[in-house]
Length: 462
Ligand code: BES
Ligand code: MN
Ligand code: MN
Image 1 (cartoon, rainbow, N blue to C red):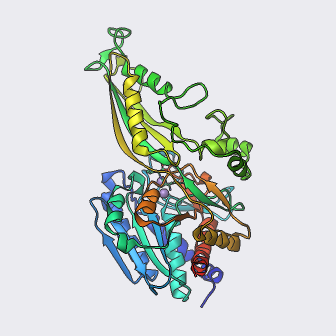
Image 2 (cartoon, rainbow, N blue to C red):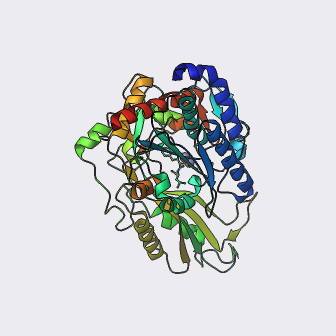
Image 3 (cartoon, helix red, strand yellow):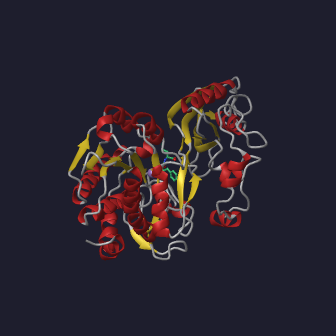
C-alpha cells in the first residue's frame, strides 16, 4: 500500500504517456469527418476505466455519440460519487496557428508551467482533466483506498451541446443515482491560488441570416440603391449594445440576479491583476459593461458576442460585389435565473423587429443551457475545500466562472444532487484556442487532490 504522493512519483511517466496516447485521437465532435475517431476515443476511455479498476464498464448507445459508463460499487450503504467528464474536443482550427500539430502532443515549458505542459487539443479541456479522475481511481483501487462507491459517466458531445446526454440522463436516473457529482472541466486562479468554481453561466447560441437581393450584384451598378445585407447585418449587430455596453434586447435583464454589495465585495477579494491580464492578452485596455469590474463582467453578468461573421467576397484581391446574404453566429452567456429558451425567443423577436425594409432576417436557434450556482455550505464543497487545503497547503477561494457546462443544471434537476467543480486548468491554458495545453504539475496535482475528496466526502457523509 502506497500513499498518493509516492504512487504518483513512481507512476508519473506512465500517467503522462497514457494521456498523450489519448490526446493523439482527434475526437472532434463538431465535425463528422472525425466520427470514427470520436468512437475510438470512447473505446479507449472504456479500456482505461477497466484498467483503473471499475467492476463494470459499458458503452451506452444514444441517438448520437455513446456515453462511457463505469462503476465500482463497494457497499450500498456508503455514499456514491458520480464523476462526469467529456472525451470529445473542440475543432483544432485554425491549424496554421498551432506551433506543433494539435493531435501530436509535445511537452514544452512555459512561464506559468516551468515543469512543462502537454500541448494538444483537449489537453486541458477535457481529456487531461477527465483522465486525472481515472488515474485517481487507479490509485484508490490498487492501494485499497477507495472509501465509497464511484460511477463514471464520460460523454462525447459536450462541445456540441450535450444533446445525447440530455436524452440519456432522464432515462437512467436509477443507474446514475449518486450523492454528489464531481467534475474537473473548469479552471483555477493560479497554481499558488487554488479556487473552486461555484458558478457557471448559461448559454443561448443562435445563427442569423440576412438576405437582400436574390443574387450577388455588381456593387457599382446596384450599390447605394438596394440594401447591402453585410452593411445591414453589422449595423443590426452594433445596435445590440448601447454606449454603456448594456445589451439592448427588451427584457434581457429582467431575471438577472443582482448581487448584493457584500457579495460583490467578497468577490473583489479574489486576487486579480488588471496589468497582468492586459499583458497576457496584449491589449491596452479592457472593454465591457459600465459599472462592473473585469471579474464581474466575465462571471456574474450576461453578455452577447458575435462568434463568427461572414458573407460576400473574402478571397484574394478585390471583387466588387454586393452579396445576396450575410450571416453571423451569436452567443449569449447567461446568469442563473435567466431562462435560456426565453432569452433565445427575446433575441429572435428583437432581431427580426430591427430589420430594415429591403432585407429578410432569419434567426436559427442552435443550443443552450441554464447557468448554475452552488452554495458553499454543503459537504461536497467542504470536502473539496479540505482536499485542496491538504494538497495546496492553502484554503481554496470560491469563484464563479464565465464558462458554461449546460448539462450541470440538468443533473441538478434530474438527479437531484449538487455538482462540485474541481478544475485544475488555468485560463491561460488556451482551451478552444490554438496551442491548448495542460501543465504537468496541474495534471499530477489533480490526481493527488481527488482521492482526498473521496476520503473527506465519505467522512463528512457519516
Ligand atoms: N470546459 C468548458 C467550460 C468551462 C471552461 C467552464 C472553463 C469554466 C471554465 C466546456 O467544455 C465548454 O467549452 N463549454 C462550452 C459550452 C458548450 C455548450 C459548447 C462553452 O463554455 O463555450
Ligand atoms: Mn470542457
Ligand atoms: Mn470546451
